Each structure stands twice: as structure tokens, then as C-alpha cells.
Length: 333
Ligand code: SF4
Image (cartoon, rainbow, N blue to C red; front, side, top):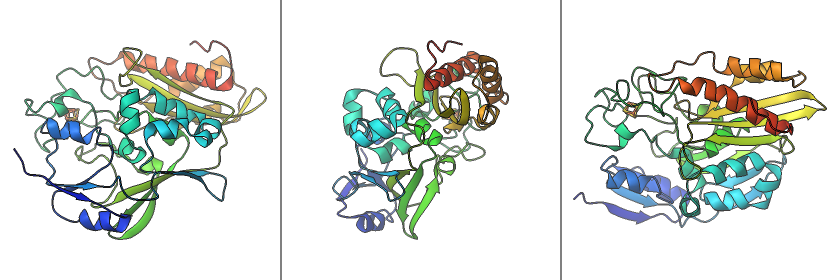
């Protein structure tokens, strides 16, 4: 059994200071970290408990009309907060689509951003090939079971997907992640927060060592009237997405003023479907335009041998989610 020390941080500065010690990791809700530790995937030497830091568990309004969600706000509290429900229903839907009620009651917003892939080869240490767990060892999923794996942005080093529902909505909403670290405070645009695997699949985010997520900022709500989160999964509850779509629209009658579309379950990070957005922006929302946009979103897809179905599934999910966001009944592709 490995010895693990425990330290309770009283404030952000103390947490950042404690995290400079070798083998230290922050623990919030612990819903993913404890699974990783029990499975021998993560072996931290020191746990820095951040759950008693004041001021990180609130949702507040910002001067520009946006909101700030503290990193320690529980997923269930964020989903059910009046400001989130009324002004960012896309985020509320995505949060409620994730995990189970019990897990949402424990999991924090900051921890949700950092949850690791659910690739089975990553979690099962009996498999000796996993570049994410053991850099340089190979990738068992390439020739193994890869039905749930990536179709966009993967590398020969890793084809895992990011499992977060919340992050897909935050990508569509252009959120900003606030962090505090040894070099001070900084903000990271959401598109730059998670990484593609490239040559370093062991690194999931652009956080620097010892940096603590303190909050997520959302810009003023432009999409509250027209948004929809669609999650396609193998069973109706407590399953990760095969494909998910966060669709947010600003409509001018039947014309799309601005479209935001992000995909989950398809890549190592929440995937903004920029090509699809460009084809929809300024256009009347016809089904032909929408299908073209959905096809463009997947034009770079490179599926694996078990997950070719995801390409068409993602296209259909985009069509359905955008129709639902626009308020068009049915919305079935
Ligand atoms: Fe490991 Fe990534 Fe390959 Fe899964 S897909 S086995 S996480 S390297």
C-alpha cells in the first residue's frame, strides 16, 4: 500500500503553495481521482484538499452581464442555479446529462474540467500498452475495442475521447477558465484549455504544474432563447456519450444570425464544429443547409474499425440538436 499524506488548504495561495511539493495533487469532489487511485492509475503522494477554501463555491454575476461559476460549485448546484437555468439552459442541460444524481452532488465544476478519459485500456492496468498512462508504451485501443473512441483530432499515440458533458456546453458558450498558480493568476480561453493528444497524450490540458482552477466565466447570455444539448448514449442514464452536441443559436426570424456547435464523444477535447457554424451563420435555417453544415463538421473524420457509425451518428445528432435549438418540431434527420 502506498503512503499518502493529506493537507487541507485554507485559501488559494496556500493550496498553490502546497501543490509545489512533489507528487501533490488537488482533491475536490474526488469522484474521478478516487477511482483512478483505487485502480492504481493515479498514485499521488500528497492530497491537497481544496474543498474548505472560501469563495470558490458561489455563482455570481459579472459587470459585463456574464456569470462566474466557482470551481467548487457542485455540478448539481450549478445545473439548478437560477442564473444558469434561465440564462444558460444549455449548460444546465449538459450538466444534468452527466453521470448520476449522486455523482453530480459530489463532483465540482473544476473537477469536471479535469476528468480523465474513460478508455478501458487506460483504467485497466493489466494492459501494458497505454501512452496516456505510461508514455511510450503504445496504444492498445488502436487494434483493440475502439467503438467509443475518437473520430476527430486523434493521433497514432492515442485515440481516447474527453468524457465531460459540461465541457461540451462550455466550449459552445466560449467560456473562460480562471486559474491561479505559482506565477500568479491567468485566464485560459476554453478552446485552449483541453489538448489534442498529438505526441503527449498523457497531458490532457494546458494547465501548468501547480495551477489551480478557481472559476469558470461565461460571457453575457446570447443564446438562452435557442439552445439544446443532445446526448446519444447506449442507455438512458449514467452512460458516457457516444456522441453529444451542444447547439446554440441567435435567430433573426428564420435566419441564423450566429451558430455555435460543439461536439462531445468524438475527440480528445470538446470539438467546436467551426466549419458547420460558418455554413449556418447568416443563412435561413433550411434542412438542406443544415445537412450540408453537419457534413462539413465531420469532413475530417478518421474513424477506427469499430466506430465508423459515429460519423453518420454525429451528423444526424447535429441536425437534430440544431433543429431543437431553433424550436423546429421533430428535428429528426
Ligand atoms: Fe491509452 Fe489513449 Fe490508447 Fe486508450 S486510446 S489505450 S487512453 S493511449
